[in-house]
Length: 72
Image 1 (tube, rainbow, N blue to C red):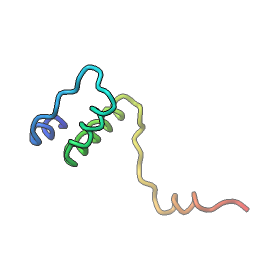
Image 2 (cartoon, rainbow, N blue to C red):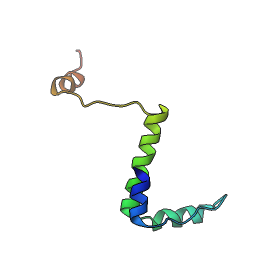
Image 3 (cartoon, one colour):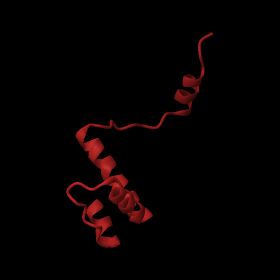
Image 4 (cartoon, one colour):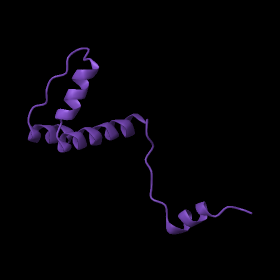
């Protein structure tokens, strides 16, 4: 999925083997918002696939309200 996003946006600069901070900064600033979003989506997919992040679900209004009430 992410490969398709990147192919639509054109080629990305190839990273060097050990880029310095300035090179990383310039590459980050050169990325378009669509490229940044595609990167984030791919990073999240990888994190979920490897178990680094656990899937979340939305809370119901009742669950949210119960979290806000503290016992006195």
